[in-house]
Length: 378
Image 1 (cartoon, rainbow, N blue to C red):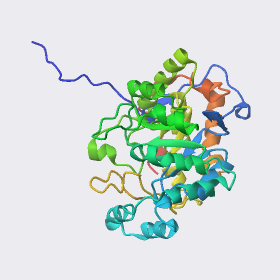
Image 2: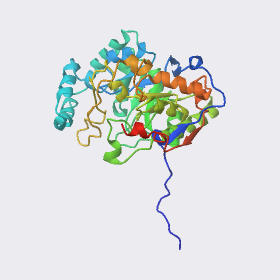
Image 3: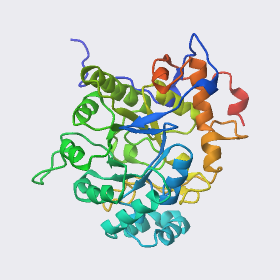
Image 4: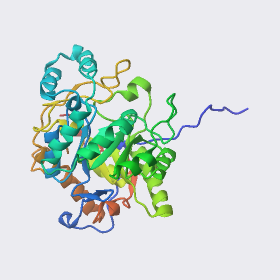
């Protein structure tokens, strides 16, 4: 009798294991368009800043708008718990590493105040910026209407893993179709990593889907509970669901790869995998304008029983403009993300992000090491 397995395992791929194949036609990078849309809203660049307190404050959301992107504010973070969140940020930043998780659990135990959510929305809107604000599923139905009334343009419903069929002991959970109908603004939902869940979420009428479980630099979900799928494979799965849904309904849902990015090359690979946009946390926490001043921590970090994140020291690497547009003297791909994306689009003959989806990609585990002896020995 032959050897049998309890389960057959599929191979999954992350950014370091694949490479983009150049196109048969090339174009000048300045001819490319990096625009993205979410619902009926359009943005110059397909880059979003993650709803992490160390990365996005109301002020940083305004800076992202000035740069053509979108910053998402955490509606359940420090900005909605404290009149003066910046003094609490300072406390977190200066705390010794061995004590910081306990401190985070303590400061995030302060109750969320809905009037502060509305106040932060108005602060963002008063700068002329598009306001996107993030809630966990358990608080969305109760808290998001006030945010929209205050002027929020986009609601993000986000948890480590989100499905359209969540089971709980409550009488009636969050029904996305009803939420979308009530709010009348674009709704982005996440996170997921599989075709089936992505398709079910799209069927509810959402405008955007966040892809990724545990890839972020400040997240330890993969270590703590062992759950996650590498980002290239996860994006390919969810993009396949988007294409099938679009062919059947004529309605396009933006796929947003969330987390795991270090370089402009990673962003380009996400786009070729089928992403319409990317969401970054730690790279923006490294900006001079970021509220964390060189530190970042995940949204799951303050969990009272099972923290799944850690405060990390990421340093301050440059201004937001340098990170997004350069100019830069760094040769490691950690700045001028938009420039890298436009150059890759030119090499692939892609005028738009949708064109870039058609580029070929290969499995290439040696792509970052082949011929790089002197770079690796530095």
